[in-house]
Length: 207
Ligand SMILES: N[C@@H](CCC(=O)N[C@@H](CS)C(=O)NCC(=O)O)C(=O)O
Image (cartoon, rainbow, N blue to C red; front, side, top):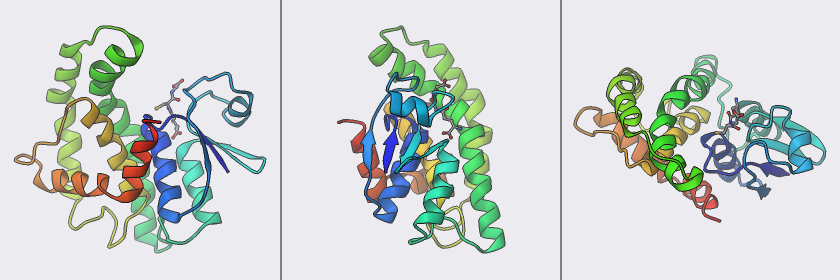
């Protein structure tokens, strides 16, 4: 099994965390998006990362890949089959990808990606106004959804993967969730990013 995509990407990190949680061996090819690697291009029709090649079976998209991995390697379960838990897991995966990512990625792009990797100037005003104006409703909602250690029931799931992955990029942007304003979320993110699967996936970006 080959996973394409650098794990600096929150979406690629989702796939690596899932595979580490399940103990599935894989080869990691940490290509950037739109890389000209022919294997990657065949697996990713959009040029986006991640993409998967499982013995010739090609699949793009982090959510599609997570569901594929779940069906092929059901243990330990990262998606419950119980109706409500399943519904919530799919919802938070979607929420992480389409609501959190486009907003939470902005400080990372401005403060980390542009100066370090793109050799461009950071637009700090854009980063700060996003944090001040766009973050609060998203973080308020997450704070309201956390009761225990996990977003869905009593088990770690794709919901936790898809939400927490975005917060590692924020750390790289020198942003930490304010524990005074969002105490449950702050503790939850810290604990989730300390899981061995996240630690390994984060370390993979440094290779
Ligand atoms: N829905 C896709 C989104 C993947 C995605 O947008 N990846 C970004 C990197 S973080 C990318 O490849 N961007 C390049 C582009 O948008 O053309 C998934 O879940 O895998």
